[in-house]
Length: 177
Length: 177
DNA sequence: TATTGTTATACTCTATAACTATA
DNA sequence: TATAGTTATAGAGTATAACAATA
Image (cartoon, rainbow over all chains, first blue to last red; front, side, top):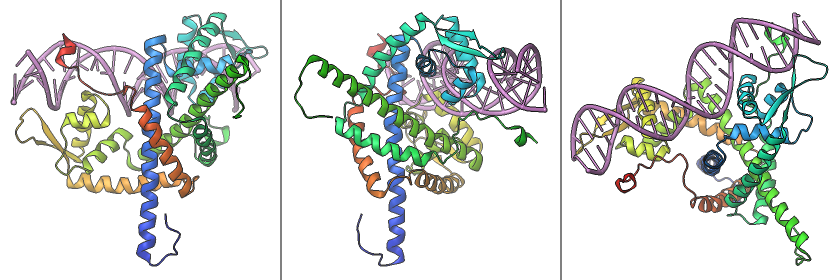
């Protein structure tokens, strides 16, 4: 807080402790806000659309790719392992929202795509979802949102150095040796 | 972005759409940062201390209350339902980190407290945990942290109006009627 | 009758590893 | 031998509801 030069070891230490507490309190507040927003979204997705966040996220990925995505690509983008993608895709396919189309040139793989019904359904959900987000972040002015967006970009950059925890990176042959 | 007055309905609408996208993008970035941090913490708690976030959080609540807390109070503070608190407390008690002491004046309830071993163990974990947080948020300067802290306070206030999703609030008798 | 805490059950989300069918 | 995807299994983490003991 102060710009005074260090006067003693004790001052230095107390400043370090303060800096630690600053980071910790910041994290706790950040976590509280995020989980609150996430909880509201989960709850509403369930009660209004009988769906879940991972299912919504999978549809969102497909909506941006008219050509479809392979299971592996979905796994990477959703940051979850392959088995999970299989399960979610099974559900969505059972409801007629997505299809596993054949992959040109690789008969092991699919191109998972939205069906027309899936696209309609997703667009309806996405519009509502966006309105919820607007409502939840209405506590900030446009300027404040821009400010946070910029600050988060900096943090995201910093965090990229840390191993992604849920990352589904498969072991390379060399690592297996 | 511009301060010009509205010129047409189309301009107004495009501005609304932009505002929506601004909120959505902000949320996605916020979520990405938070889940990344949380993932790193979970992973490290497991590999370094063989524990989990809910267990850590329960100990953290007790550390601040030398008198101990009842199961119901823990349930409220951790924002989870009673059954979960029972399970976590069972584990921690089995490891000798907490005890269920009797509650003066209410033989249905307990006062869950840290044991001396639990306190030692928690303090060791908490110090390391704090260092991790400092490391993860090192992408921001002290000034930026302060800025975010202030902004989050505003948001938290706004979010308080929304029903807490995981809240364990029991139904009142009237609601059961 | 209401409340504290426990038990039993179930569901979502996730990871790991063995498996199959192609490549 | 390597890769795409599936299956089976396990384990967090959570909620709900029926229950026992006490208030």
